[in-house]
Each structure stands twice: as structure tokens, then as C-alpha cells.
Length: 331
Image (cartoon, rainbow, N blue to C red; front, side, top):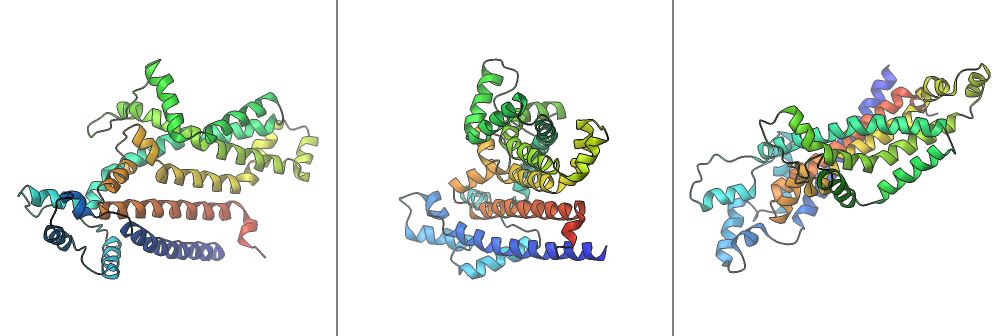
């Protein structure tokens, strides 16, 4: 038990170190983006004095190192700053009461929507992919196995926006079974929210199914040649029972890893899908903020994407170690 706790603490420390390095990369990359928020708001006819006044008001005239540590210390306290766009709008209309929506308040409902989309997708994709992988291993080299491989590889080889438009054509335009736009707002019932989320969730399912299905199939087939599996077969146990009861538990480590990686993708890689379906998630907010150079929101979105990716990889690593005792003693 102590060795497991030690491994978990080591992984947590490595995760925090990785997140710190990623935060430096995020801050540097975002601040190196071409364009300037003050110039973008004031337009080409802005005087240098006006541009400089806005930059000074937003703190952009400070040294980047000072701004980075201010941003990092704020993020550690849960304060991601204020949106440049909202701060400028309030002062522009002369209604700046000092009460502004923070970046955290702006991101929270969008992040909840993205998590809902990721949850619906995971609820469909994970059992579907694992079942397909088990059946493909059970009927290896059959017509079903080949058809499944061709279909999943075709879906993963296609761009996400293409799959989205194909689903919109068949499920929203020609048959009108599902809405083509995913307008989510407060006060919607769970059923209505689920209906409007289903089309982007199906698109993401097509994207992530191939990885999980093929890893499940490969991991199970790799174990089917093991002596204990041969012994189970010689005892007359049915093939499906051999796979589910004997092969699948020992193949969980690689399957958990690939599932965690795909769940991370559902949070960090939804930008294109959210834009196509006008889904009000964090990916749509990220694109809108990049357009107007709203640096605090862009940095916060990138940090959330990185934290989610690191956290899910860390979880996969720990679950793999717990599911396979050999990984606890690498020597």
C-alpha cells in the first residue's frame, strides 16, 4: 500500500511540474501572438496616445515576467483576472461601475457545457468501443472484424468538420431527427439539452471510437495466445466467457490508457465541433477570444485544457498501475 501511495505522490509531483512548465509555454505563446488588443479595439485610426492609455489601463505596459507571475499567483488563488473585452466595453459606454464579470465567472458555464458534451459522448463511445473491440477479437479475421476496422478507420481518417456536416445532412436536413444547431441555455430541461447535444456527441463518438476499439481488440488478441487462455479453452469454456472473464481483466491497463487519452481529447479537442454546431462550450469561447486578442480568457482556456489533459493522463497512469501489479515493481 505504501508503494502505491509513493507512486501516486510521485505522479502528482510530476503532473504539477508539467503544469508549471506548460503555464510558461502558454503565457509566452499567447503573448507572442500577432496583433494587439488595444489596436484591435480602436482600429487603424487610433492615435498612439489612445493605444498606450488602454495598454496602461490593462497592465500590458508591464514587463512580461511581472505579468506572468501576477497571472500565475492569481491562477493559484482561483483568480484568472478580468476579460479585456468586458473591461473595455464597460469604460467605453461610460457605465463602468467597477463590478465586472471575471474570467472564471465567464468560463464556468461554458466549461460546464463542455463537460456535459464530453460526458454524453463518453457514455456513448466507451461502452460502444469496448464492445466492438471484444466482438472484433472474438470474430477475428471475419467479415464483421474487417467491416468494423474499415468503418472505424474511415471515420477517424475524416476531418471532424466533414463528419459533422455529413451527420447534419442525414440526421438534421434530410430526415430532421435532430436539431442541426446546439443552442444550449439556462432553464432548458435535461431532455431538451440532451437532444441538442446528441449530434455533436455522435460526431465526437465517430472520432474517438477507432482508437478505443482497436486497442481493446489488440490487447485481447495479444492475450489469447497465453497458456492460461489455452487451458481455459481446453476446459471447454465458451469463447465469449474466456475473453470477458479471463482475457479482458488482464488487458485493462492499455485499454484504460487509451480511454483516458480519448476522454482528454473530448475536453481539449472539441473546438472544431463546438464551432460547427455553435455549441456554447469552452472551445467556442476560446475561438471568440482569440479573434479579439482577449489574452486573459485565452490563457485561462489554454490552462484549463492543459490541466484537464494532465489530470486525465495522471488518472490513467494510476489506474493502470492499480490494475496491473507488475507495473508496481518494474525491476
